[in-house]
Length: 190
Image (cartoon, rainbow, N blue to C red; front, side):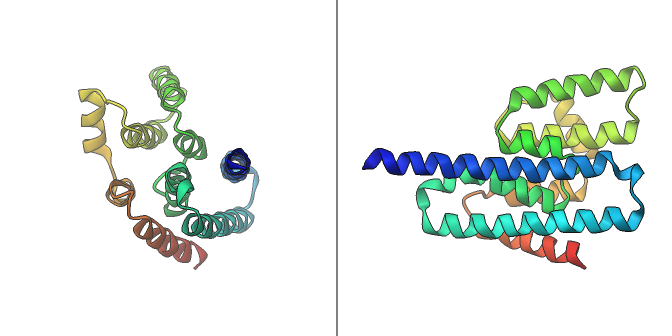
């Protein structure tokens, strides 16, 4: 009997990860196709996706309140959703790697960006935004950053990333994360 619960927990986690992947892919696709959509269509689609993320967030709340064994495993997904909703991270690919706790992939992405920036394939503002997101994600995953990376973060961090840092520092207090996410979802709906 005990293994059956483990199997169900594993299946639930897999289903939640797949749903999060789908929503993050939807956000990424939307950003990639932004130029092809008119402003109203883009905003409406983005609003619908954020509403789906909000509903997913509500489902996670219910699961977490009823099954304490999943809290630690779901915390990464919870933070990823909060980051997406609050717009602290604007790059769905980074959110996905952060939620799946993939520091190696984040570092690979950072190296690719550094290369693209050096050869002029990536504009400075986009490079700065994405590098900030990746470095913040790496820090939250407990990865050691170089002195240059720490300097880059302190020089360029904006209020959204600072807010994310402040809230996610106290991960044990899921209520604060959900409260912030709820406020940001309401702002996005208006």
